[in-house]
Length: 494
Image (cartoon, rainbow, N blue to C red; front, side):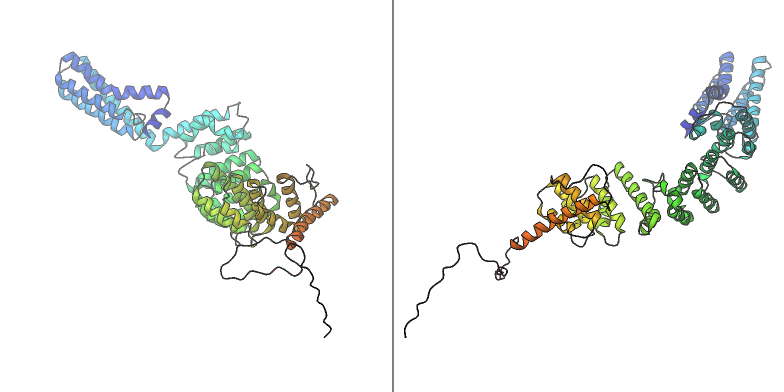
């Protein structure tokens, strides 16, 4: 913190601060050399140590450092007066006067900073510079890096009232600069929140509204957070993005206040093009994940966008690091029948893309109690590892006999890509209801039923179980070999 304050000061400020800290030691050292006094030399050494102590604490004339520097000057003045009170020479009088004036100057600066008068003076000066500025960044998101805006943000840290006059300026760049100067503000007064929120709602330029919402994102007051949530329905996408970031801030503590607003935003078809919650990938709190998982079971836009939000969040988390607990949780959701079906499929695709589907997981995914898309995805993954896997082929044949065109087309794609069958699929996307799709579905059905008829004539033998008699062959099935010879009986005469 000390190094940051020291580095934030300008070179001129650091030079002046060094001169003020070194002043008492330099004055006492000069007197000690002139009068050959060991006591004054000891005082100069003590003042020099004090200068080293406060050198990295910040600017010397600003609180809290200024109070300690005042004590250094008063100590030097007492030391100088005690050893030179009987001397009427100009050097001694000049030293006492310099130490006294230095202490008075620091008291004056300390009071100006403590009362805020100096900060208001600098804020008004910076506001005037912003009004007269003619060149602005072309990207509105870079407005907070303008030098005058950075300096104004520091000047209005305690009192934001000098900045309110910029909200009524005719140029949108000036208004954006005013709102940008309030970003990351730590302390907000209720009157300041009311003024800034009212001005943000009145702005007609979407760029200005977006910067205004970003400025208010540091407010933790629940009524203000709920008012900011109304910007989720703003016609401009940048404003909606700023509102979402404001709602998702504070590590999830605001979710309870904006939950219904976010649900309405996800369910609104006008904003379906936004996809999932923008800017929330990898940042969702636990309470938000629970709500979104429940919303994924809802129909239409709410379920689809909630699912997409969760998948993007999990993908961003896995890109950072493969967490074992997270992978186990996602795997359990894939095979859990209580998880929304669409979310199960998307999570299975996500785990497959990161090669996190184990053999045991694939075996459970291909069970008959799993939905068709999950079984199909598991069978495809098994065929990629082993194109002649009998379990995967059985799953594909079972799905191929089902009366579902979408699944049948996906089965045809797997057969053509991984097994080399010519199913008549083209590179272009095929409509499910087209005539060509119907032909492909027929080919898949013929492939699946052909194997099933052959399997009825030559079943796969199972493992013998001790104590269980051998199962006789089906009716009409005989052992291979020549037919038994017919024995002719001779009819005896008697």
